[in-house]
Length: 88
Image (cartoon, rainbow, N blue to C red; front, side):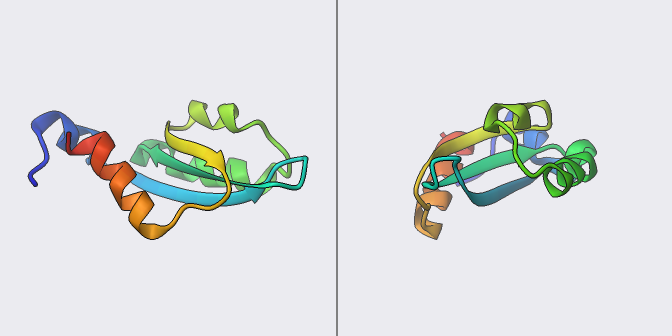
């Protein structure tokens, strides 16, 4: 599958799709898949490295949340999510 022009623009300039797992305040596991533009990567990593507790929605200041849910996400699920967001 080829990327469209718009999808290529989204992924250029050093953008990265990152996957994180963590624990909610309730102790339940959660995961997030997020697209961070290259210009925001350094500030994004600084934010998550220095902030012990934050609302997931605060991450939207740095990029686009592609998927967020309780539990873990398998690698095939991650690939399917990225395909859905960028290849359809």
